Length: 160
Image 1 (tube, rainbow, N blue to C red):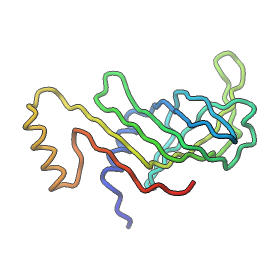
Image 2: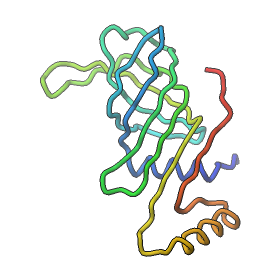
Image 3: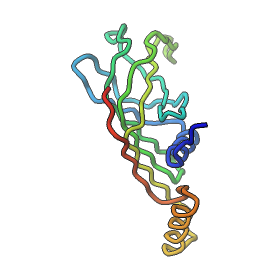
Image 4: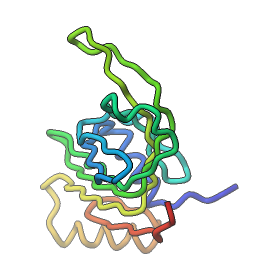
């Protein structure tokens, strides 16, 4: 059985809790997608995040296109903030959603590979700074598990 990175597990857990992100794609010469709020469909053990985003009609037929993008997870009243970036690819390009105005909205399914992640968690303010630091060092050294605080992950850039 393949062992899953504990940092990736923590990221997946937080994404599952928050579920909503701001999608910010980099524009490419091939096609462009608008930045918008997206709902996360799924995450997997390989470090991919699956989500639908809106597209305009000129992007129909863009199967297997790739771009670099970021997802920013912030929830009002929630102590965690996650920023993720990596290569994304179009998985499905023919999903239509009926909008609130009665017009159909063209949606595409994207899969984003986590290449860079920044996570900030602000625990309750009851603990002193020294107690927080000791707790974090203990968890890092002895449990290989991130509890609170910050971590940054930069995976090797793959070709996309």
